[in-house]
Length: 167
Image 1 (cartoon, rainbow, N blue to C red):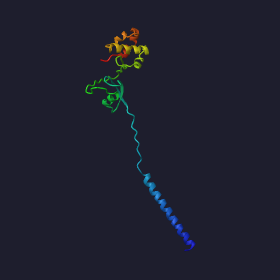
Image 2 (cartoon, helix red, strand yellow):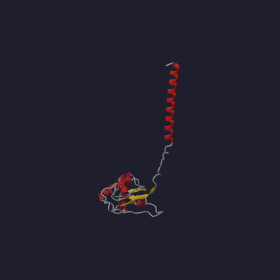
Image 3 (tube, helix red, strand yellow):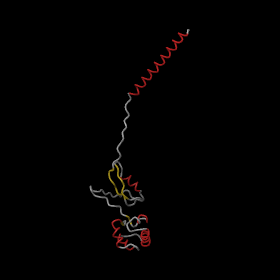
Image 4 (tube, rainbow, N blue to C red):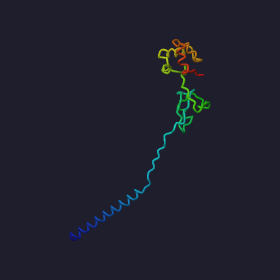
């Protein structure tokens, strides 16, 4: 074989290889470029369906946000069931435009830090309420608060709408 034939032979092989690679690339590109576009669906954030108050025999009584799809059972679980009888549930639905009442502090269950949040009740008076409760038993009505040393009528009038006594 002469060098010119040898050179022509390798030139032909090179051209064939380049043609095969080019055709393969075009076929691969055309297949993948025609694929279906990827659809990305972003669901809107769950809208708030309302608020529900959970109280009674639960660890964390208070208002809970109710989202679409939530169940009452899940909210009760979130409130921390103690020895609650789940068969006996009381449900109250607010009327349109009706405002929810602020959560009242139960004088018979509140800890000192919670009592201190009341206007006019500091650390000393909060401890006096707890001491009174321990010495005399639970409060029967909110008026009994005036019997606690250091709490007079003026203080009682400021906080009477913020306190309660559990049944």
